[in-house]
Length: 455
Image: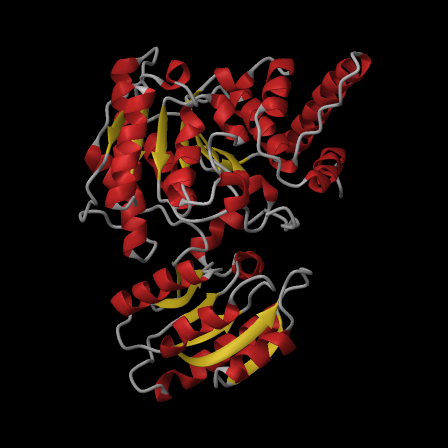
Protein backbone atom coordinates (compact mmCIF):
# COMPACT_ATOMS: atom_id res chain seq x y z
CA UNK A 1 0.00 0.00 0.00
CA UNK A 2 1.37 3.41 -1.00
CA UNK A 3 0.76 6.14 1.57
CA UNK A 4 -0.03 9.69 0.41
CA UNK A 5 2.85 11.07 2.44
CA UNK A 6 5.31 8.77 0.70
CA UNK A 7 3.98 9.95 -2.65
CA UNK A 8 4.78 13.52 -1.60
CA UNK A 9 8.25 12.50 -0.43
CA UNK A 10 9.02 10.76 -3.70
CA UNK A 11 7.87 13.87 -5.59
CA UNK A 12 10.80 15.67 -3.94
CA UNK A 13 13.37 13.50 -5.72
CA UNK A 14 13.32 15.75 -8.78
CA UNK A 15 14.92 18.55 -6.76
CA UNK A 16 18.05 16.52 -6.02
CA UNK A 17 20.46 17.94 -3.43
CA UNK A 18 20.27 21.70 -2.87
CA UNK A 19 22.65 22.95 -0.16
CA UNK A 20 21.20 25.76 1.94
CA UNK A 21 19.10 26.37 5.03
CA UNK A 22 16.47 28.82 3.75
CA UNK A 23 13.77 26.23 3.04
CA UNK A 24 14.37 24.25 6.23
CA UNK A 25 14.35 27.37 8.40
CA UNK A 26 11.18 28.71 6.78
CA UNK A 27 9.38 25.42 7.26
CA UNK A 28 10.65 24.99 10.82
CA UNK A 29 9.15 28.40 11.61
CA UNK A 30 5.85 27.40 9.99
CA UNK A 31 5.81 24.15 11.99
CA UNK A 32 6.44 25.82 15.34
CA UNK A 33 10.20 25.20 15.49
CA UNK A 34 10.15 21.59 16.64
CA UNK A 35 13.96 21.47 16.45
CA UNK A 36 14.12 23.72 19.55
CA UNK A 37 12.24 21.26 21.76
CA UNK A 38 15.14 18.87 22.33
CA UNK A 39 18.93 18.99 22.56
CA UNK A 40 21.04 17.92 19.59
CA UNK A 41 24.46 16.51 18.83
CA UNK A 42 25.73 16.83 15.25
CA UNK A 43 27.91 14.21 13.57
CA UNK A 44 29.74 15.32 10.43
CA UNK A 45 32.60 13.91 8.39
CA UNK A 46 33.52 12.10 5.20
CA UNK A 47 33.48 8.54 6.56
CA UNK A 48 32.34 7.02 9.84
CA UNK A 49 29.34 9.26 10.53
CA UNK A 50 26.78 6.49 10.66
CA UNK A 51 28.59 4.16 13.05
CA UNK A 52 29.68 7.02 15.31
CA UNK A 53 26.08 8.25 15.48
CA UNK A 54 24.75 4.76 16.18
CA UNK A 55 27.29 4.07 18.93
CA UNK A 56 26.68 7.48 20.50
CA UNK A 57 22.89 7.10 20.50
CA UNK A 58 23.21 3.72 22.23
CA UNK A 59 25.44 5.13 24.96
CA UNK A 60 23.06 8.03 25.61
CA UNK A 61 20.07 5.67 25.76
CA UNK A 62 21.90 3.39 28.20
CA UNK A 63 22.34 6.38 30.50
CA UNK A 64 18.58 6.87 30.71
CA UNK A 65 18.20 9.59 28.10
CA UNK A 66 15.35 9.28 25.63
CA UNK A 67 17.39 9.44 22.44
CA UNK A 68 16.59 10.16 18.82
CA UNK A 69 18.83 8.95 16.01
CA UNK A 70 18.75 10.41 12.48
CA UNK A 71 20.95 8.62 9.94
CA UNK A 72 21.18 7.96 6.22
CA UNK A 73 21.08 6.07 3.98
CA UNK A 74 18.74 3.25 4.94
CA UNK A 75 19.44 -0.34 4.04
CA UNK A 76 15.97 -1.89 3.84
CA UNK A 77 13.28 0.64 4.79
CA UNK A 78 13.12 4.42 5.01
CA UNK A 79 11.90 4.19 8.60
CA UNK A 80 15.41 3.15 9.68
CA UNK A 81 16.55 6.72 9.28
CA UNK A 82 14.39 8.11 12.09
CA UNK A 83 14.55 6.24 15.41
CA UNK A 84 13.74 6.83 19.07
CA UNK A 85 15.51 4.55 21.53
CA UNK A 86 16.43 2.21 18.66
CA UNK A 87 12.82 1.86 17.45
CA UNK A 88 12.10 3.07 13.88
CA UNK A 89 9.38 5.62 13.36
CA UNK A 90 6.03 3.82 12.80
CA UNK A 91 4.80 3.87 9.20
CA UNK A 92 1.60 5.70 10.20
CA UNK A 93 3.54 8.46 11.97
CA UNK A 94 5.93 8.79 9.07
CA UNK A 95 3.06 9.25 6.62
CA UNK A 96 1.17 11.65 8.91
CA UNK A 97 4.20 13.86 9.46
CA UNK A 98 5.13 13.84 5.78
CA UNK A 99 1.68 15.27 5.05
CA UNK A 100 2.16 17.82 7.83
CA UNK A 101 5.38 18.99 6.17
CA UNK A 102 3.59 19.10 2.81
CA UNK A 103 0.82 21.28 4.28
CA UNK A 104 3.41 23.66 5.75
CA UNK A 105 5.27 23.84 2.42
CA UNK A 106 2.02 24.53 0.56
CA UNK A 107 1.09 27.28 3.03
CA UNK A 108 4.51 28.95 2.93
CA UNK A 109 4.57 28.70 -0.86
CA UNK A 110 1.13 30.28 -1.19
CA UNK A 111 2.26 33.24 0.90
CA UNK A 112 5.41 33.66 -1.10
CA UNK A 113 3.65 33.47 -4.46
CA UNK A 114 1.09 36.03 -3.27
CA UNK A 115 3.99 38.33 -2.41
CA UNK A 116 5.54 37.82 -5.84
CA UNK A 117 8.28 35.45 -4.64
CA UNK A 118 9.05 31.89 -5.71
CA UNK A 119 7.50 28.96 -3.81
CA UNK A 120 9.46 26.87 -1.33
CA UNK A 121 10.43 23.47 -2.75
CA UNK A 122 12.07 21.35 -0.04
CA UNK A 123 14.30 18.50 -1.17
CA UNK A 124 13.85 14.85 -0.25
CA UNK A 125 16.45 15.11 2.54
CA UNK A 126 15.04 18.38 3.86
CA UNK A 127 11.56 16.89 4.11
CA UNK A 128 12.87 13.87 6.02
CA UNK A 129 14.86 16.14 8.35
CA UNK A 130 11.71 18.12 9.13
CA UNK A 131 9.79 14.89 9.79
CA UNK A 132 12.54 13.81 12.19
CA UNK A 133 12.34 17.13 14.06
CA UNK A 134 8.55 16.84 14.35
CA UNK A 135 8.67 13.24 15.51
CA UNK A 136 11.38 13.87 18.11
CA UNK A 137 9.44 16.84 19.47
CA UNK A 138 6.25 14.78 19.71
CA UNK A 139 8.12 11.97 21.45
CA UNK A 140 9.58 14.45 23.94
CA UNK A 141 13.08 13.09 23.55
CA UNK A 142 15.98 14.41 25.60
CA UNK A 143 18.55 14.46 22.79
CA UNK A 144 18.85 13.73 19.08
CA UNK A 145 22.01 12.47 17.41
CA UNK A 146 21.89 13.98 13.92
CA UNK A 147 24.07 12.62 11.14
CA UNK A 148 24.62 15.26 8.48
CA UNK A 149 23.68 14.27 4.96
CA UNK A 150 26.34 16.29 3.16
CA UNK A 151 28.77 18.85 4.53
CA UNK A 152 27.59 20.67 7.63
CA UNK A 153 27.26 24.42 7.27
CA UNK A 154 24.47 24.19 4.68
CA UNK A 155 23.10 20.78 5.67
CA UNK A 156 19.48 20.87 6.81
CA UNK A 157 20.36 19.20 10.11
CA UNK A 158 22.37 22.30 11.06
CA UNK A 159 19.12 24.15 11.78
CA UNK A 160 18.86 22.21 15.05
CA UNK A 161 21.80 24.22 16.44
CA UNK A 162 23.36 21.50 18.59
CA UNK A 163 25.89 22.34 21.29
CA UNK A 164 28.31 19.55 20.29
CA UNK A 165 29.58 18.53 16.85
CA UNK A 166 31.61 15.37 16.22
CA UNK A 167 33.96 15.48 13.20
CA UNK A 168 34.76 11.89 12.24
CA UNK A 169 37.13 12.31 9.27
CA UNK A 170 37.85 14.52 6.29
CA UNK A 171 38.43 13.51 2.69
CA UNK A 172 37.68 14.84 -0.77
CA UNK A 173 33.97 14.46 -1.53
CA UNK A 174 31.28 16.55 -3.25
CA UNK A 175 34.02 19.03 -4.14
CA UNK A 176 31.68 20.95 -6.43
CA UNK A 177 29.66 21.93 -3.33
CA UNK A 178 31.99 21.61 -0.34
CA UNK A 179 35.19 22.97 -1.86
CA UNK A 180 38.21 21.68 -3.79
CA UNK A 181 40.51 20.94 -0.84
CA UNK A 182 40.33 19.03 2.42
CA UNK A 183 40.85 22.32 4.27
CA UNK A 184 37.79 23.84 2.61
CA UNK A 185 35.74 20.73 3.31
CA UNK A 186 36.81 20.76 6.96
CA UNK A 187 35.53 24.31 7.39
CA UNK A 188 32.26 23.47 5.67
CA UNK A 189 31.69 20.57 8.02
CA UNK A 190 32.67 22.50 11.13
CA UNK A 191 30.20 25.16 10.02
CA UNK A 192 27.39 22.91 11.29
CA UNK A 193 27.60 24.77 14.62
CA UNK A 194 27.30 28.16 12.91
CA UNK A 195 29.34 30.30 10.56
CA UNK A 196 29.99 33.18 12.94
CA UNK A 197 31.37 33.59 16.44
CA UNK A 198 28.00 35.00 17.45
CA UNK A 199 26.26 31.70 16.56
CA UNK A 200 29.01 29.23 17.47
CA UNK A 201 30.67 30.62 20.63
CA UNK A 202 30.66 28.21 23.54
CA UNK A 203 29.92 25.11 21.48
CA UNK A 204 32.21 22.09 21.44
CA UNK A 205 33.90 19.95 18.80
CA UNK A 206 34.98 16.35 19.26
CA UNK A 207 37.66 15.79 16.62
CA UNK A 208 38.93 12.52 15.20
CA UNK A 209 40.46 11.02 12.08
CA UNK A 210 42.33 14.18 11.06
CA UNK A 211 45.89 14.54 9.82
CA UNK A 212 48.23 16.74 11.86
CA UNK A 213 47.79 19.56 9.34
CA UNK A 214 44.01 19.36 9.37
CA UNK A 215 43.89 19.04 13.15
CA UNK A 216 45.92 22.26 13.51
CA UNK A 217 43.53 23.97 11.10
CA UNK A 218 40.52 22.65 12.99
CA UNK A 219 41.87 23.92 16.31
CA UNK A 220 42.59 27.34 14.80
CA UNK A 221 39.15 27.58 13.19
CA UNK A 222 37.45 26.52 16.43
CA UNK A 223 39.35 29.20 18.32
CA UNK A 224 38.15 31.82 15.83
CA UNK A 225 34.57 30.65 16.43
CA UNK A 226 35.02 30.65 20.20
CA UNK A 227 34.55 26.88 20.44
CA UNK A 228 36.24 24.32 22.66
CA UNK A 229 37.84 21.24 21.09
CA UNK A 230 38.22 17.74 22.47
CA UNK A 231 40.68 15.42 20.69
CA UNK A 232 40.16 12.01 22.32
CA UNK A 233 42.70 9.23 22.36
CA UNK A 234 41.77 6.03 20.57
CA UNK A 235 40.49 3.68 23.26
CA UNK A 236 42.02 0.23 23.01
CA UNK A 237 39.71 -1.12 25.74
CA UNK A 238 36.68 -0.98 23.43
CA UNK A 239 35.11 -4.25 22.28
CA UNK A 240 32.64 -4.07 19.38
CA UNK A 241 30.64 -6.53 17.26
CA UNK A 242 31.78 -4.64 14.13
CA UNK A 243 35.22 -5.80 12.95
CA UNK A 244 37.91 -3.25 12.19
CA UNK A 245 40.05 -0.71 13.99
CA UNK A 246 38.26 2.16 12.25
CA UNK A 247 35.15 1.27 14.23
CA UNK A 248 37.21 1.42 17.43
CA UNK A 249 38.23 4.92 16.33
CA UNK A 250 34.60 5.90 15.74
CA UNK A 251 33.49 4.40 19.04
CA UNK A 252 36.24 6.37 20.82
CA UNK A 253 34.67 9.55 19.44
CA UNK A 254 31.25 8.43 20.62
CA UNK A 255 32.54 7.84 24.15
CA UNK A 256 34.11 11.31 24.29
CA UNK A 257 31.01 12.98 22.88
CA UNK A 258 28.74 11.15 25.33
CA UNK A 259 30.88 12.18 28.29
CA UNK A 260 30.90 15.79 27.12
CA UNK A 261 27.16 15.84 26.63
CA UNK A 262 26.01 13.94 29.71
CA UNK A 263 28.25 15.78 32.14
CA UNK A 264 27.74 19.16 30.50
CA UNK A 265 24.03 19.22 29.69
CA UNK A 266 21.41 20.71 31.97
CA UNK A 267 18.36 18.55 32.64
CA UNK A 268 15.42 19.00 34.94
CA UNK A 269 16.65 15.94 36.86
CA UNK A 270 20.36 16.53 36.35
CA UNK A 271 21.41 14.24 39.19
CA UNK A 272 19.96 11.31 37.27
CA UNK A 273 22.44 11.66 34.40
CA UNK A 274 26.12 11.15 35.13
CA UNK A 275 28.51 9.66 32.61
CA UNK A 276 29.45 6.07 33.47
CA UNK A 277 32.37 4.81 31.37
CA UNK A 278 31.91 1.18 32.36
CA UNK A 279 28.26 1.34 31.30
CA UNK A 280 29.26 2.96 28.01
CA UNK A 281 31.80 0.24 27.24
CA UNK A 282 29.29 -2.49 28.13
CA UNK A 283 26.80 -0.88 25.77
CA UNK A 284 29.26 -0.66 22.88
CA UNK A 285 29.93 -4.40 23.17
CA UNK A 286 26.33 -4.95 22.03
CA UNK A 287 26.11 -2.30 19.27
CA UNK A 288 26.43 -3.84 15.80
CA UNK A 289 26.17 -1.22 13.04
CA UNK A 290 24.36 -3.14 10.32
CA UNK A 291 26.04 -3.96 7.02
CA UNK A 292 29.46 -2.62 7.96
CA UNK A 293 31.98 -5.35 8.78
CA UNK A 294 29.07 -7.15 10.43
CA UNK A 295 29.49 -10.84 11.22
CA UNK A 296 26.43 -13.09 10.97
CA UNK A 297 26.97 -16.11 13.18
CA UNK A 298 26.10 -19.70 12.31
CA UNK A 299 24.72 -22.30 14.75
CA UNK A 300 28.27 -23.38 15.57
CA UNK A 301 29.05 -19.93 16.96
CA UNK A 302 31.39 -19.08 14.10
CA UNK A 303 30.91 -16.30 11.55
CA UNK A 304 29.13 -17.69 8.48
CA UNK A 305 28.78 -14.39 6.59
CA UNK A 306 30.48 -11.01 6.74
CA UNK A 307 28.44 -8.09 5.40
CA UNK A 308 30.34 -4.95 4.44
CA UNK A 309 29.09 -2.13 2.25
CA UNK A 310 32.54 -1.30 0.87
CA UNK A 311 31.30 0.70 -2.10
CA UNK A 312 34.45 2.59 -3.11
CA UNK A 313 38.23 2.14 -3.11
CA UNK A 314 38.72 3.88 0.24
CA UNK A 315 36.21 1.57 1.91
CA UNK A 316 37.74 -1.50 0.25
CA UNK A 317 41.15 -0.57 1.68
CA UNK A 318 39.59 -0.54 5.14
CA UNK A 319 37.97 -3.89 4.36
CA UNK A 320 41.20 -5.62 3.35
CA UNK A 321 43.06 -4.15 6.35
CA UNK A 322 40.40 -5.68 8.58
CA UNK A 323 40.53 -9.06 6.82
CA UNK A 324 44.32 -9.08 7.27
CA UNK A 325 43.89 -8.50 11.00
CA UNK A 326 41.02 -10.88 11.78
CA UNK A 327 41.60 -13.54 9.10
CA UNK A 328 45.33 -13.43 8.34
CA UNK A 329 46.26 -15.47 5.31
CA UNK A 330 42.68 -16.53 4.62
CA UNK A 331 40.93 -16.41 1.25
CA UNK A 332 37.20 -16.03 0.91
CA UNK A 333 34.26 -16.87 -1.27
CA UNK A 334 33.08 -13.36 -2.19
CA UNK A 335 29.66 -12.29 -3.43
CA UNK A 336 30.29 -8.99 -5.22
CA UNK A 337 28.17 -6.40 -6.99
CA UNK A 338 28.69 -2.70 -7.67
CA UNK A 339 27.16 0.39 -9.23
CA UNK A 340 28.09 1.66 -12.67
CA UNK A 341 29.80 4.80 -11.37
CA UNK A 342 32.27 3.02 -9.07
CA UNK A 343 35.93 2.29 -9.84
CA UNK A 344 35.36 -1.44 -9.91
CA UNK A 345 38.79 -2.20 -11.37
CA UNK A 346 40.60 -0.66 -8.42
CA UNK A 347 38.22 -2.30 -5.93
CA UNK A 348 38.79 -5.74 -7.46
CA UNK A 349 42.59 -5.32 -7.53
CA UNK A 350 42.60 -4.49 -3.82
CA UNK A 351 40.40 -7.44 -2.92
CA UNK A 352 41.89 -10.07 -5.24
CA UNK A 353 44.62 -11.35 -2.87
CA UNK A 354 41.91 -12.15 -0.32
CA UNK A 355 39.43 -13.96 -2.58
CA UNK A 356 39.48 -17.64 -3.54
CA UNK A 357 36.17 -17.71 -5.45
CA UNK A 358 34.25 -14.82 -7.00
CA UNK A 359 30.46 -14.83 -7.26
CA UNK A 360 28.95 -11.80 -9.00
CA UNK A 361 25.44 -10.43 -8.76
CA UNK A 362 23.18 -7.45 -9.35
CA UNK A 363 19.86 -6.12 -8.12
CA UNK A 364 17.08 -4.62 -10.29
CA UNK A 365 18.24 -1.12 -9.30
CA UNK A 366 18.91 0.69 -12.62
CA UNK A 367 22.30 2.09 -11.59
CA UNK A 368 23.66 -1.40 -10.90
CA UNK A 369 26.47 -2.66 -13.12
CA UNK A 370 25.29 -5.40 -15.46
CA UNK A 371 26.73 -8.88 -14.97
CA UNK A 372 28.26 -8.94 -18.44
CA UNK A 373 30.13 -5.70 -17.71
CA UNK A 374 31.31 -6.91 -14.32
CA UNK A 375 32.47 -10.22 -15.80
CA UNK A 376 34.46 -8.34 -18.46
CA UNK A 377 36.17 -6.21 -15.78
CA UNK A 378 37.15 -9.35 -13.91
CA UNK A 379 38.37 -11.20 -16.98
CA UNK A 380 40.58 -8.25 -17.86
CA UNK A 381 42.22 -8.64 -14.46
CA UNK A 382 42.54 -12.42 -14.81
CA UNK A 383 39.97 -13.09 -12.08
CA UNK A 384 37.81 -16.15 -12.84
CA UNK A 385 34.09 -15.95 -11.99
CA UNK A 386 32.83 -19.04 -10.15
CA UNK A 387 29.14 -18.14 -10.48
CA UNK A 388 26.84 -15.31 -11.42
CA UNK A 389 23.15 -14.53 -11.05
CA UNK A 390 20.53 -11.92 -10.22
CA UNK A 391 20.32 -11.48 -6.45
CA UNK A 392 17.63 -13.75 -4.99
CA UNK A 393 17.29 -16.12 -2.08
CA UNK A 394 17.92 -19.09 -4.34
CA UNK A 395 21.13 -17.58 -5.74
CA UNK A 396 22.29 -16.56 -2.27
CA UNK A 397 21.68 -20.11 -1.04
CA UNK A 398 23.64 -21.41 -4.04
CA UNK A 399 26.62 -19.23 -3.13
CA UNK A 400 26.44 -20.25 0.54
CA UNK A 401 26.33 -23.91 -0.50
CA UNK A 402 29.42 -23.41 -2.67
CA UNK A 403 31.23 -21.87 0.25
CA UNK A 404 30.17 -24.66 2.62
CA UNK A 405 30.98 -27.50 0.22
CA UNK A 406 34.48 -26.20 -0.51
CA UNK A 407 35.32 -25.44 3.13
CA UNK A 408 37.21 -28.68 3.56
CA UNK A 409 39.30 -28.19 0.43
CA UNK A 410 40.32 -24.56 0.83
CA UNK A 411 43.76 -25.19 2.34
CA UNK A 412 43.33 -23.59 5.74
CA UNK A 413 40.42 -21.39 4.71
CA UNK A 414 37.68 -23.64 6.10
CA UNK A 415 36.65 -21.08 8.71
CA UNK A 416 36.59 -18.16 6.27
CA UNK A 417 32.99 -16.88 6.10
CA UNK A 418 31.24 -15.82 2.93
CA UNK A 419 32.14 -12.20 2.23
CA UNK A 420 29.32 -10.07 0.77
CA UNK A 421 30.46 -6.63 -0.35
CA UNK A 422 30.61 -4.01 -3.11
CA UNK A 423 27.46 -1.94 -2.70
CA UNK A 424 25.20 -0.72 0.09
CA UNK A 425 22.26 -1.28 -2.26
CA UNK A 426 23.21 -4.94 -2.51
CA UNK A 427 23.78 -5.16 1.23
CA UNK A 428 20.26 -3.90 1.87
CA UNK A 429 18.82 -6.48 -0.52
CA UNK A 430 20.84 -9.27 1.13
CA UNK A 431 19.72 -8.19 4.59
CA UNK A 432 16.11 -8.37 3.45
CA UNK A 433 16.70 -11.94 2.26
CA UNK A 434 18.57 -13.02 5.40
CA UNK A 435 16.85 -11.10 8.21
CA UNK A 436 14.77 -14.02 9.48
CA UNK A 437 17.75 -16.39 9.62
CA UNK A 438 20.27 -14.45 11.71
CA UNK A 439 19.79 -12.89 15.14
CA UNK A 440 22.15 -10.07 14.17
CA UNK A 441 19.52 -8.83 11.67
CA UNK A 442 16.55 -8.92 14.03
CA UNK A 443 16.17 -5.12 13.83
CA UNK A 444 15.02 -5.42 10.21
CA UNK A 445 12.21 -7.89 10.83
CA UNK A 446 8.88 -6.23 10.21
CA UNK A 447 10.42 -3.61 7.93
CA UNK A 448 9.19 -3.89 4.35
CA UNK A 449 11.66 -2.92 1.61
CA UNK A 450 11.40 0.59 0.20
CA UNK A 451 13.30 2.08 -2.70
CA UNK A 452 16.75 3.52 -2.16
CA UNK A 453 16.83 5.61 -5.33
CA UNK A 454 17.23 8.57 -2.99
CA UNK A 455 20.15 7.10 -1.04
